[in-house]
Image (cartoon, rainbow, N blue to C red):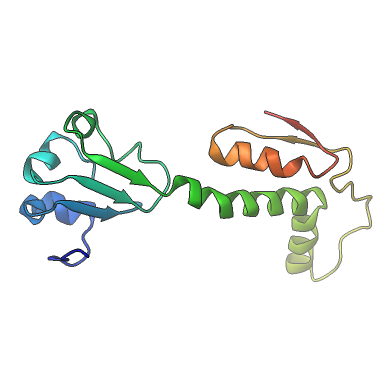
Length: 150
């Protein structure tokens, strides 16, 4: 449904050759996207929409982008799901001292001492940020008997 007129670019290649964006009406991008400031937008004068297949657009967008009415989409919600799942897995694994066991076996070639393993029951988990991922992790932690602080 689109005509791709150039191979994939990097932020550096676009900065070195801004004329690459002259015909662009749509940009498909992700992590490492160029900052879409006045200089970028002057070269990409036909730009109407940016499909950003990554998380936060904070580093890519500028006030100039919004002022020109360019539509920006992001995959931040979809990307958050596997990050929430991975974070939950790491929290539970760590509460069981999984990394201590794995690293002791790897480095010492033996099982570590049989200290009590607390697991999740009654543990306190601190969440540093309550963005999309932090809120998702908190929601998943409701299934376990842990105290969550943020």
